[in-house]
Every structure is written in structure tokens, then in C-alpha cells.
Length: 331
Ligand SMILES: [Zn+2]
Figure (cartoon, protein in one colour):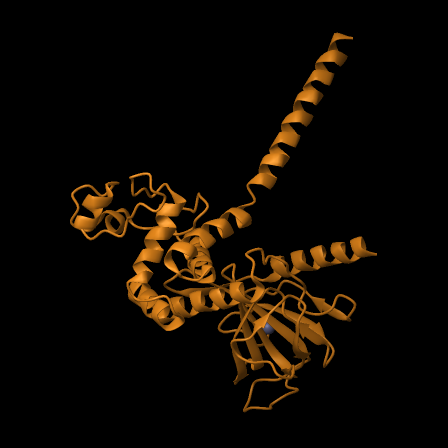
């Protein structure tokens, strides 16, 4: 009897803490909280929220794959090195005094008005980056110049500009849906071929997954993203590159052709048909049929310095699982 009471008490305790936690999680939806922060800084600085969101997301992505930077642990992803925040010649790299930081030309500012320029405060951090950009201007071209002077890397500026375009297009931060690159009902097969010496469209080793399907089977964008590259390549044939906001560059090769009106710089969403399965490549433009038709799917990440490929197979398998589950749910 006593055991039953104890178990009952434990159960009540657990269910009550769970519901409290659920309510708390709802209250602190990070996308909502971030959007609030971006809009707040936009109001003060006139820098559009989607640029702030793009910079923040880029920095968060970079920190997740870099060992020399601390992992993101708050609402903002932006990271300032202490010496950049406090000023290079400031004897105290952890200085939080706005006036002293300003004296040493540090980037740190007091964004939330509490008298401190703190790297522990999201508003201070985002406002500091916005203030840096403000010295260049608030229109697209000047923001790009400001970003170039900050990062000194064309690819980084391009990636951030792409993120900004994606956020602006959709008007929201939550863009996490994914689908499998060919329709689930289509006849197709694929297996893990990462690093195989054989395979088509890779570099030295096979950098991707080959999805075998018939000519013309629709090829679909798998993520929310921006078309960064489109055209012919001697090995890849007709190929297309799409960058998403989660630091993935998706490479589709050997296609039979592209969907009409598809342009570089265009924003796509998961499921958007971008072309068809083919066997193009391994010769001058238009070469086809040197191997069985398939979609070569590659994935790449960037860490702000260099880009590398990784095995897309586990991701493809996951997207397929989730898509199948969602289709069943709808029925
Ligand atoms: Zn391949």
C-alpha cells in the first residue's frame, strides 16, 4: 500500500514537472525570441532584421564546426574574440565598461542600457555587430562592404547575403523541413557509397550518394535554400548547387536538365522540382549515357576558412524516414 502511494506521488511529481517544462519550452521558443531581438535591433539601427538573422545564423553555424571557437550557448550565435570586444590594446580583455572599451576602439557596446558592455548579453552582442555595420551603411551594398571588411572572405559575404535573401523571402526563422531528393513513390534505389573508388561524379574518392532511378524522374530541392550554382561540368554534367541556412551545400549532378525558369540566386523550398534524373557528364556539354541514369547527391560544409564534403547517406535516409512518416500522418 505504501509503495503504491509513493509511486503515485512520484508520478504526480513527474507529470507536474513535465507540464511545467513544456510550458516553459513554449514560452522560450528560440526562433520567436531571436526574431524579437532582431526586430528590436532593426528598430534602433535600421539594419533589416534578415541581415541580422543571416549574420547570427552564419556565426552559429561556424562555431558548431570549429574547434578554435566556443560552441554557441545563448540566443545569439555571434562570437567576438575578447580582444576585439574590449579593444586590442586594452590591458583588460574582459573589460565591460562601455567608455573604456570605446577608448580602446573595442567593438563592445551596451545594447540593453544596463551600463555594461557584456558578452554575456545577447542584446549587447547583436547591437555591437549592428553598430559595426552602421559605420558603413544600412543598404545591401554597404552591408556587404561592411561584411567584407569584417570577414575578409568573399565566400562568407556570399553565404551571409544568401541567408539574408532566404530569410527575407520566407519572413521567418524556422526553415527546418527536409524531403528526399526524388519522390518517394518513384522507383529508385540507393545505398551508402561514401568513399568508394568507383562511382560517378565524385572527385578522388566518391564524395556523395548515388540514387539510381529512371531518366526524367523528378529531382527535388531537399531543403529551404538558395540556388548558388547551375550549369555544365565535365564530370558532373548538368548540375545544380543549393545552399541551405544550416551550413549545408547540396550538390545534384548528372541531371537530364533543369526545370524551366530556374535561376542562380533563386530561393527554393523542400519539394520544389529542379530537374530530372539523367546520365549527363564525362564529356563536353550535352554528353549523356556513359553510365546508368542516377542522381549524384553530395553535401558540403564550410567553416569560414575552407569547405569539405561529408557522407550524405545518413541524412538522406533520415529525410526519407521523416517524409514517409509525415505522409502516413496526413492520410
Ligand atoms: Zn555519384
